[in-house]
Length: 424
Picture 1 (cartoon, rainbow, N blue to C red):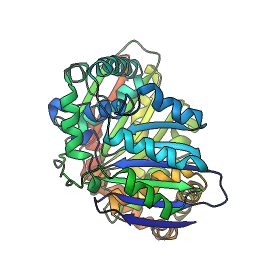
Picture 2 (picture 1 turned 135 degrees about the vertical axis):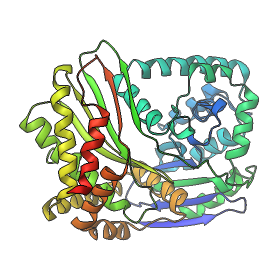
Picture 3 (picture 1 turned 180 degrees about the vertical axis):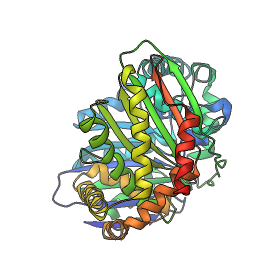
């Protein structure tokens, strides 16, 4: 494998990882613009733009975009997150030129036709309805909203019915002009692809892309608190969260290891204590989300209403114990899991293309796998324990739940439990 990087005169960064033994390639454009870039009245606009990019250009109809890719046996999709948006194509190596031409077409010459826009608004309203019908999706939206209230980072990526209905073609064009520029975008490829050929084709295909400027996003202010949505369901979705670390923090890797130790698999503390020993839930796991200037460490559990009263004190106790004692064995096991994940990513062109694109957007360089692995393996149990202490005792908890009204450990009691960490 050979990672190569080139920057065009318009600021577009091209990065590739050639895998000569494959017969396929994944090609995509990653944009440093997500839902967090939106103003209050633009909530959902990033996601709408992602949909509308496929709805016709100056040279292709929406049907032709789909037909051209699928006639070559490929697949095309896109995704919107809090801080990034990506558009990608998976295809045979011989069809990389076609993939690149279509990506360049939809990201520079989309029409945003009014009739297409009205139809796609209706589709997204159905998508919002589907999310509202899914208790777990509701819980995660509530988690962000409660952690960062009245801030773009805390608003739903899909937007609301009211905001989505309000968007016009001009609003989409204005947003695209602000964020879809060379200096804010990465063209990434992995698989059987020649870097020099990719650069040559991209230089021609993206000739109309302006260099533009990177726009700073508003800083976050983690708040925390408690919110619930009472629904007639069989299960309660519960998430307990704390402010975590951003991806530039020196203890970022320790935070990932901590999340793995707590709830990263069947051998994790939460899975063993809550599910295996006590049978209090079917699903429980922990995670650490990192953003550019903040993060979120959280535990998600799905349980029956009759078990919520017993479950939360056990979860709190497991988290407190992590602040008082991490073992070398646990750290080694988590390191092995993370290292294996890094290596497995090298075997998937789609995963690898996304990985190196995000590294360019976040760190302005591709971090060699050996360097990443070394950083993970260098973390000590003392670092992990210190991160646990800092996060659990130094952050106001966020508690959200969706489901039937049930007995749940009060947030004030949870706060007191974690405040006691520093006292002993």
